[in-house]
Image (cartoon, rainbow, N blue to C red):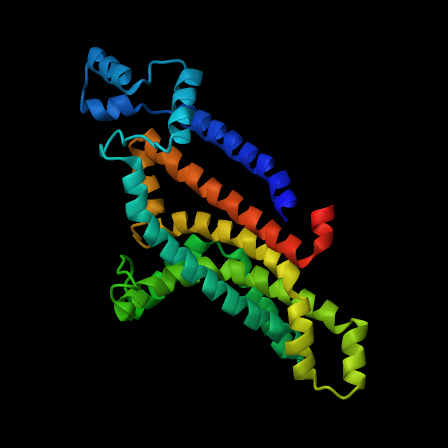
Length: 314
């Protein structure tokens, strides 16, 4: 496993390095100047030029990128142009809220996905199959921000039983916190639940067609026992691969859903930073999301290699 990990690390660092360069260039290519934002209304060119010099924005792009990269290696994410505080502190203040939303969404998606996937191979009547197929398709094709607005309209406006937005940590007040968490986590979980359901169903159907399950059935073992004790564990490796990918997807999706539900996480921080051209904050948030995706993918590959030794040899 150590050798397999060492072979994967260079590509992971390569992805992070490339992502950092692309993020840096794209932000500079977008119209807007943080120096103008800081200079206030109707600034003189000399004032804007002085601020750009103080921020180092008048240096060549490669020099700016090199300085940012050197600070990153030292663990320094810089200071916010607008707020003025350390970017590391800003991320630390918001990260817990985004992680809370992502973890809740992942749990919802796994529970719903496995329930729908198992139902897909146990429900035999035509109406049930059609209903499950419709639920999966709707969950997959409706964008989260659309389902988010629909849920807000139904459960916060037409039938006000849940708050439309805001945040109370479930660790601080579990009952109230869950009310704030339910809608954004459910909205974020629906597309991933549909994907999990499809992989669980396909894996179960394949496992139930294998010789060992037919042999177990011929020995009189009940269908329920074959399903839960034999077929389901053998259908998990593909789901594990999808799980790693969906953690990154959910984390990235949380950034968008936070804006819909006024959830004070990394997404709302990034939104505020984008509108004010606060480069250090935007760069840090985007690179952090990429880093999480890379790390999760690496851990998924390691888990997959642990389950299937052929992966380590490949």
